[in-house]
Length: 407
Image (cartoon, rainbow, N blue to C red; front, side, top):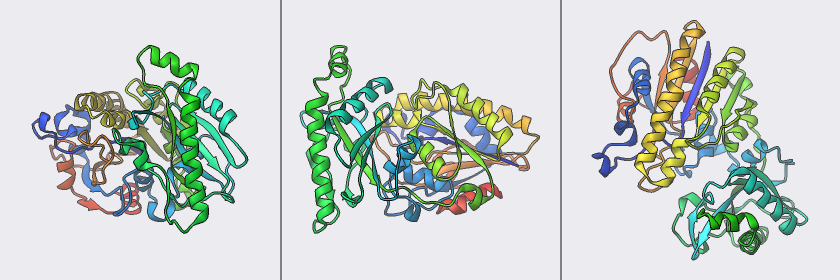
């Protein structure tokens, strides 16, 4: 058998008053998702263990069949793996956004979705002027970069906040702080990161790239914002844990980093952006090609989540329509090419409700299609269908993966 998991990142939502109290799934025409819901089996998956923050790193680690409560060390080190940042066992890696602060308020977690060439030049500029012994900046993709600290000098035991969680709030309320004020090394680390955040402003604002962006009405990168730091993860390879070799396809460093940590082959598709202009066809083609060579493929589509962060239901509906038409449609049609030996699972990693413009922790709906299933229960793909589905509520990723691989 071959196994394909497809992630429609952040597509789950809360009922929206302007949509007649429907969720995004319920308000969107998705004939292909509805087909897999009707011809497969459904349930809900708790991707965020109780008490953990609803981050994509936590949710996707769950879906891949791991336990983030013991396996997750932070988002930063996972993205560092994807960006080929050299990490030893003591280094601490933080995800480092380029953000927009106006009048002390965090206005944009992505600096207007700044382009990769622009942002990489800015990060290299910061490396030249802010780096010192034990402190280095590494470029990533678009607004997502890496800050690496020497773990023998600094500490990962600090509290940081994702910028997309606190839009339109004062940045000063969410500056890093030690998780224990008696921990002198953690105190030193928080103070150093705050210093870097403030100094980055004086360097970034007058930079030519930002001045050019300002002239054409785009948000500028006013500050860095490091968050979710940790040390290199040590998790059991997927092929040892589940007996399968596999690949991961995405436009997002975090997902590649998770795959690399799990021993999955990262597949980079030209034109994959993580936004609605992404190369859907290229991702689908890559997934089909990888399935011909490997047992398992994890295909991640980011755009719906990004539209959830805008808070605009129409943009999120349009992104979900694209996902259904340009990803689910061709993959379902390709199923016949695998001699009825392809099992397909589809689900969001977490909700990204338009109302709050960030992630929430409710369980998400999933559907699993097995060509051996002989039933047809006509229903839409939705949160409600998942709640009343055959699998009910699955509480952890290891059980979900075992059900997916042995349906």
